[in-house]
Length: 212
Image 1 (tube, helix red, strand yellow):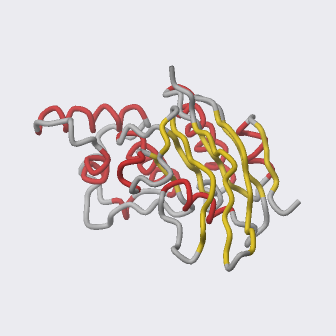
Image 2 (cartoon, helix red, strand yellow):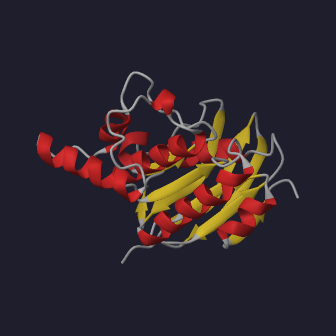
Image 3 (cartoon, helix red, strand yellow):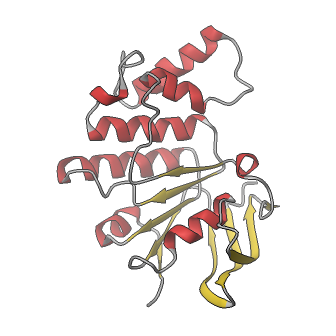
């Protein structure tokens, strides 16, 4: 049975000073929001969870995924998806090429991979967009492609680093709803970091405030 994401007595220090400490669990299909102003350690926390923490910091405690201790695993073996403020789509690849990048190595065969990409585009309302240049997409469309690329990699958890902050008001609610609905459908534990209370409210889960 999936246990979700567990941050067990996690503490991040710099030069002997504790930058942040957190003990929390995010169940499958639920969202935990971590709020705080700039400099409160939100991005540092995400780096620690994904295995990308700057060596200048020291980490104690454990990161557990479905009961497995991944604290010392390399980033690529943790299977943790992350969405950023910027979509970070590869400009030299088509929309379909970007999605193909997220497909797991176990999916073999050109026809099977293409069929999965086409189905994924249909799921996010972008049917027929496989050959499009990412530069021609709107902000909302780019956000949808970035989300699906992350989900195609079959992550065990999803981290959200203020991914809605650059969207206009009309698109923000729509993309937010899509992200949370997809994560819930796939029973992914989600950790959202934001300074926006509307994001926290829409997430509907627990809220932890850093630096409070």
